Length: 276
Length: 139
Image (tube, rainbow over all chains, first blue to last red; front, side):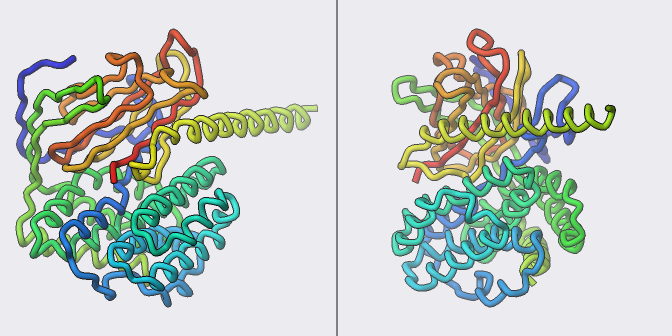
């Protein structure tokens, strides 16, 4: 299937991207977009794995909801609150889970999403807010259904804002623990791989309500993209019986203390522009 | 008369578009069945309308230590969509064409990496249709 030789690349490894719907090779981008944004649940899971204590001040306040008056801000903060719910679910906090679910449901209703997704699933999520596994599974299902509904109804821009909000909040949560935790620091640096897609996505969004956020977000993406990285191809191992492939290629992203400090500061600027 | 034709064409375009979206929705729901309860959806569906030997692609990041399930569907039955996973240096890491166009496959990731997922219709089974990819990661 592929050669056994190993190829090493050092220095920035930005994937080449075509921002048009159809490339010269006739390849189509999915939905004319290049968007695959890492699920915030993956960062929340990493935080849980590392037994990092809960910090109330890290999540967007429930009271802020009243500030979000237009669709763009509502969608961005739906992504933020969704990432917060995944984070909160790590800590068995009872009523706070309900508060953040209510926020998500309220904003989704404002955006006419809630009435257009499977009510059984929403009710199931609502009645399982004391179970971390259920929250993670059902909230990801909630966002997948929202994504499907918005894309099917020519409201893809709102889906994009939800994804951007979730991504920014997951960076914010990762950056907080990054100084003292190598895994979180590594995960923050690895956002380099997603930064180019987020930047392309942001560049397409022309809503005036996004205009104050966009330059800071693009700057953040540029800072991440410029991080030095290495990649070495290794031949994967396939297990046909179990239908699994072990991807063994080696990679690293180098994030110095100075870069970490600058990127963390930029994350704060972007997040504040979204939540305020 | 011209106005009437214009209305008719606009109406036809809207109908076709709605029909395509409905087709993609139905396939996305079908495909999601492969993301079983041991997996958490990444919260997105990736889809494209394809014909002939068109290929659709998107970039994604796979994080180290995770096991991902990628499911690929076109139509309401399995094994219709070919998908490949390609690394940043264009090495093919996996192609389901080598495994009877398997509708889903798992990937354990040793180190975080950026990959491109490409898909195309199996020309022996279909000339055109909606291609859907869904991704989940193991709990």
